[in-house]
Amino acid sequence: MLIKVINANTSPAMTATIGRSAESIVAPGVEVSAVSPAMGPESIESHYDEALAVPGVLAEIAAGEQEGADGYVIACFGDPGLDAAREIAHGPVVGIAEAAMRTATHLGRGFSVVTTLDRSRGRTWDLADRYGVSRFCLGVHATDIAVLELDSDPDALKKVISASRAAAEADGSDAIVLGCAGMSAFCPVIASEIGLPVVDGVQAAVLLVQSLVQMGLQTGSMGEFAPPLPKTYTGLLRDFERR
Image (cartoon, rainbow, N blue to C red; front, side, top):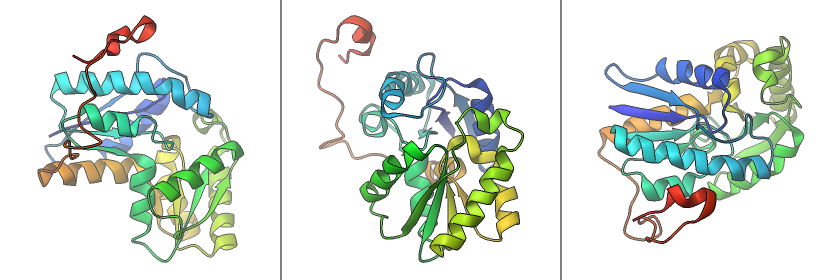
């Protein structure tokens, strides 16, 4: 089985972190290919960034179809391009926000999300509503650490631990969801420090894809998620034309 894990930004350091996290959790015989798109933003911290990340994500999905990937993970907490990716992939596609939040609902009555910048909190609430878990999401808390600083700031881990502890106390939550793929390596340390389950969306999504593939399940393609209709694309998007 080959699972392609797509870091939606172009940071090599974050892709390496995501790849190590994914590889550490899969079953023997499951291969992980962690990649970044050839084009897109170096980090995703706005609606603008997210919109411009989607073409690169979809290009990696298309490449994965040629490479024989059995399933895909979109490793960005905004789940950019998830619906579009499901239209063009034969195997299952799972976003880390969807996987993390739904996993957390099995761990108690409610969870808190600890994310990066304050401006991303609204998007997180939108996703909780979309995925049907808003009644379990007791709070979304920002650390105000920029995405790339998770790798470069020596105090980043301490800040995320502190924010996670404060979120759990403020919300009375039973679990913490880490709201950025770049926090993946922090997961076991935070759990040990605060004494609560901490969900890393990268590992949750990878294991979900692994399970779906093992069960022979994929996105239904008879309705909304049927392949896109053939049409002409022009300019910078001409290579995305579907025939």
